[in-house]
Every structure is written in C-alpha cells, then in structure tokens.
Image (cartoon, rainbow, N blue to C red):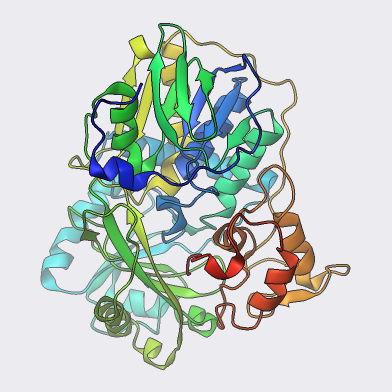
Length: 487
C-alpha cells in the first residue's frame, strides 16, 4: 500500500503512465520483480534469469538506462582504490572478472588501454605509496610506480608539470550502454519480462508474495529487488514505509572533445582520488572521442542533469592544463550524469528476509564495473531466503551490435541500408534494428544509446530529418519534443 503521506518529492517523480510492454497475465506470479532498468537492474535481471528465476523488470521511464546509468565515463575499473574488504570492492572485483568472461559471447567492446594515476603536486605525490598499497590489498598487484620521465615517455602529450604516478594496466574503456542493454536483452531472450513506462506506486507483502501497484497495472512477485538508483530510498519508503538511507544526488559534468583529440592520450589519465570523488579523468571513449570529467556537485534535485558554462570552462581548462594540445581541439558535446550517492560511502545493499525484499542502493560511479558482481550478491541473498531455481539447460547468448570505433562497424559492410548519421556512421539497418524487438527504443535518447545516431559533431543537425521519418510512430513523444541526452 502507499504510505499515508507522500512527500512533494514523491509526487515530483511520478511520470505519466505509458502502456506496458506486455500486459500482465491474470494470476501471473513472478519469482522476482526488479525495480529499475539501469545497469544494476539489467545485470540483476540477467543473473536471476540465468539462474532460472521468472523475472519482471519494472522501469518508470519510457526506456531503459534513463537515470543514473545514462551519464558516466565508461570505464571498467579494477577497484584498485575501493575501500579494502568493502562490499563495493568485492562487487567491483567480481563484476570486472565476469565482464571479461562474458564480453566476447555478448560481443561487448573492450579498449585495453590501462590507466595512469598521476600526481600533479607534492601533496598528491606523497599519497601515491599508500594508494599503491591499497591497490595490492585489493588484489590489483600489477600496479607499477612511474617517474616523471617514464610517464612522459608513455604519454608525450602530457604537461611536464606532472610529478610522478603509477600504472594500473588492467583498467579498460567500455561502452556504458551496450553492456547493460545486452544484459537485459539476454534476460529477455531467456524468459524475463520488462515493463517500461511503469512506475511502482506502492505495494504490500502478504506473507508469501508482493502485490505491486504500478502505472502499468498490478503485478505479483514472490520477491522484490529495489534497483531504483536515484529513487531507491523513495521506492523503499513506498513499499516498506521507511528507508535506511537517503539518496544525495551528485552531479558530474563532462566535456567531450572531437575524435581527433583521442590521439592525444593512450591511457586513462586518473587523478589521485579524494575521499569524495575519483576526480577529473581524461580518457578516450569507446566511440573514438576524448572526454574530460566528471565534477562532483552535491545537489537536491534527482533529475536536474543540466550543465553550466562556467563549470564546463573549468573542465576544459583543467583538461588543457594536463594535456596542453587539447587547446586546439573542438568540443563535440557536453553532458552531465547524476550519481545516486548517499550519506554512507559503501553500497547500501540491505536484505529483509521476512519481507523477501532486497535493496541495492547508493551505487555511485563504480556501478558500471560492479553491476555483474552486485547481481551475484542479490542472487546469493535470494537463495538465503530459501529460494531455489532451475537454470535453463541452454541459455541464449544474443550478440550486441558493434558501436565502438575500435572495431569494424556496420557501415563498412554491404546491405546496410545506407548511412543516416554521417558523423557517427550509423546505418539505416542499425536504426531499424534498434526500433524492433522486445527492447525497441522508445525515445530519441534510447535510440542514441543503442546506435549513436545524432551524437557526433553536428549533434543531429543533418540527420534529425531522416530520423523523424524512420522513427515515425515508434516513439511515445514526437521526435522534436524529445530532450534526449548528449554525449
């Protein structure tokens, strides 16, 4: 049932109802309802489905990856700087390991570039030995100290102001959207269901299962897994009447430089992290650009991902300070993401066995790396409730489309239908494929994340007309009214 008095914030988060992807069958009971289709929710749905559970994913937005997961730096972290023995560190290690195990079967990209953690002043340099010791304590034992000369030999475009650093060879760049989309697609092809435009409004546990009230109609599930990201505490309050943590949104703004800038840096350039943030990173993207960011700005709003000129200028200047040749490079795009931070530094994973309920909250910037590990943790907790499933004898392994600039793309092959977005070389066949199937894009933003259309240098100036024709009747909002996202 709904709490007696919903807050103003609760009301502000309610979106207009949209048709469910698949109407619930009368009397249908799922083994688990996963609330939230961000990277964590998609990974949890995949893991539980592969273990044999009957899963439904519930997402309030019209498309998946529309919250915290739509804006991050796209790095697969080793967890070298995570708090030792923390849940975050364990889940990053497990998630990192599983991504490497499954990526070829799901056709997910991996840019093996490594990372350099660099000190730019005396104070940062003094912290390097402790950070390297922390990395080794976390099992990342191949870190290697570098002198200024060794750093500049590896990255000759860096400012000679750099003082010292160390290398983390196994940090990688990945596609932040193909991976979670592939996780959920694999879940769907192995029997899971997904309801988009379907906000959870309330619910009650009757001792055996949850009856959920949603914008898409009632749903019944024997267990609930709350992966609602920026709204995780609100969902807990709606279903449990209380929350053990409070989401404190942390905005991160990014500047994306033109593809020509990608040749200026081989490795991921990391700062010495602080207690609050990993700091401003310089790295190539899977799509051939180079980005600088993020900031770490605490705010009250859970959906204000706006950027501002002064902060973007600061980021550009900071990038140029570390990589002077960036001064001659044009900026392609800017964007901001919101991390679901909380008052606690570690992840907030809470299991309530009596109510068959798991909260997966407070997953900040490392969520992309830890998602598969968190999914295994959720499965372990559900098993601890007494649940048991029978895995499918032969699971389906759908392959993701290739969007990275570091592999052969569809445009280079025949019968591609022609190129629609010339900046990002997106073909008509790729767009049509993204508009088809059980996980079809429902918005321009969703189409961008599946194809890269409009995300290049012209930001859609030349291809939006063609896209409006191809997508006619596919989106719930007219194309011109869709705000989309940048990046």
